[in-house]
Image (cartoon, rainbow, N blue to C red):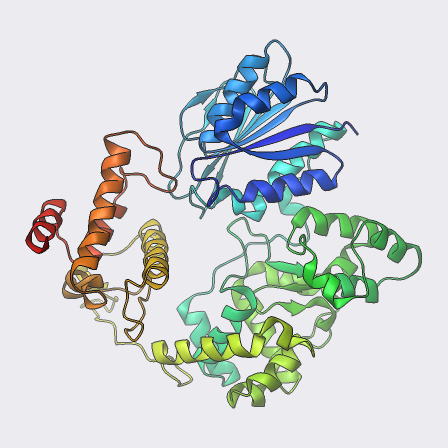
Amino acid sequence: MEILRIPCLKGVGGSLFSRGLYTIAEMANRRGHKATVHPYVLWKEVRDRLRADASPIVIVGHSMGVDKAEKISRNLAPRPIAAIISIDSAYPEKKPENVERVLSIVSGIDRRFHVTGRNVTRHRAKGTWHVTVDDEPAVQKMIIDLIDEIANGTKSENPMQRFYMGEGRRLSEADMAALSSEYQIPEYLVRTVVQVEAAGKGSHSSGALVFRYELHKGWKYSSGKVRDRLAAEGYANPSYSAARRFKLANDYPTLERIAEIAGEELACMASSWGMGQVMGFNHELLGFDSALAMVRDFAVSERNQIAGMLRFIERTGLKKQLLNEDWHGFAEGYNGKNYRTNNYHGKLDSAARDWKRRIGAGIAATRPPAPIDESGEIIPAGGEELSDVDRSRIDYLARRIVFYQRNFELINPNAPAIEASRPVNDQQKGDGLMMFMDGKKTHFVALIVVLIGVMEGLLGADIPGVNVGDDWLNYVLTGLGLSSVRDGIRKIRDIV
């Protein structure tokens, strides 16, 4: 295996974004390569260091970092560059002649630019944003696969053949209601466990099943030379505290290396999977012949994952504690005796209060009845259907607005929270955030939004995650109670 020199160049706002490059660099370094992460403004320093190093070069860039990766490559010509890995380039770039190959990845929602030229492999990471695409595990896995291929001179396998990959069908409202009814557990409690255990997501957009590998379980379910090999590479340890500190517990290349050493069954046994993060060693309790069979079933859909979680709760006797909201008892049974270390009981209590307030405490969640047209079809609130992209944008913006409200004290802590992806009528659209914020702070936020659009649209500044050509600005203005930019300026003028 050749040792590669892999500089990773962050984009604008790299102290907040481009964080996935650190994960990529760490994964590469564990393979023996020399990977480093740099701000894009230091590209000349990176170039000079590469000149002094005779190792084959692979340059990874995110956003503006791609532009500098191209400049470094041209500056080093005629020296060959093994590859440029472009992650959502801020500008249209052309592959330099001395670059042998390019992997060009763009985000799925607000994508920027592909690199053009010969021997360029293109990929669109569905469901990702410009500022999150580098964090997507499937994207990181694709990059590491290319690095392995260059270092070893081998061809990467089809990712859909991997044991943790599947269709990854999303959970629907109907699925959640049906499961809640089948197991006679109020939906708010089901959603509580899902939120705390897997942050509300069981499969990535690539179809990769969400997982966490536990070092101490890898130690428990291995023995002899296999255990020795796992321990030698840092993949098995009897200490629970060591498992908590393990930084690559969610890393798919690490999982595949564990499977290579000890087999897929052990990798599945020693990991927790899906929306409920059920440990693989519980497969018999859930009715599966093997942990691998459980993982493959979970990879099909998030509904299967929730069904498995609820079977686990029912068959371990935890249903009583869950229904009684005995969070200490439930957390100990679900997460183990060390549950206090991660404050599982506190997180469950907080999430349950929030979900109960939002959807009610019954088996069937409380929601307003949907209007029906003459043919029996549901009429979307507001009179028009929202596309998946629109819903993704609204979800993202709602989360960011809540973040700024809470962290910069722009919201009354006693006011109800914003609920993303719920249809709203025209009057609600007009009210928007005006019900949460009063006075100058509301219009100050609106002014910031307008200025962001001006900076990127007129001044050409690259603001990560912003594309003024999209409709998201209209959503924000409407949510702030402003029908237009002119209306926002008028209201700001009136209060100054």
